[in-house]
Image (cartoon, rainbow, N blue to C red):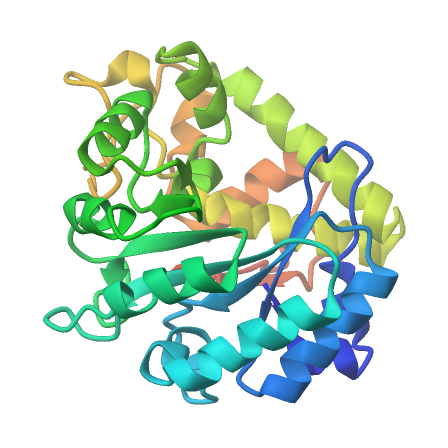
Length: 320
């Protein structure tokens, strides 16, 4: 997600999010903003400067910093402005415009039924609904039955669903229940990036710890390619790798599950892996994530400090 305001300021870190890798067959950019002119202008610039297949408007981000600025899920309460932003985006671009949003702000007052038909009428290329409200964040299960009701409101616009897909069984069930045209997978792909292989081949992949480490090695290779191999590039790659591990550690190897598949909101007790590396990869401690990074990037500097964005634990390397 790139902030429209930061793109217009030419902020380097924001523009880095728009860089397409040669391996990406389909590449889209999700932008976030609250002002019609600002988001429209950002889209116009992206249309000219970025190698992109579609631009997506974030209308679902629940975090307070975004919400208080009137962006993300705040647009669900400002639908007039939402539709003006989308109209502006369509006016200044010649690539598809898509939208991602939640059911509503509050659990008891879903509003997606007031949005879906309008997006369909506007010619939005595709929209995705996360089956939760803003106040739910990521608690309780996503409501795929509600997403099915929203699918029935569409005529031409493909509608995708999002929420809690962690296995091919989840995918099959949610598609059947809702009838949506496709799915978006977020946390499930961060926790187990091979989920797409499992869905395609309708199987559980009992991936080994070494195979998982190889995936992390490729991640590091991409990081060093992007940020460079100097100390700054190494530390930036290490930081993003540790951030990713705040999701990766939640994977439970299917070979040791008593009743597969694993479900998204399960919080299992600590377990012993089938080898030392598998056990280390299951650790919730940031200090162990740094240890794994050292297997791939060498020793962390003595002054390396890591504070996860998504976890309430942190690590600071102590000399000696």
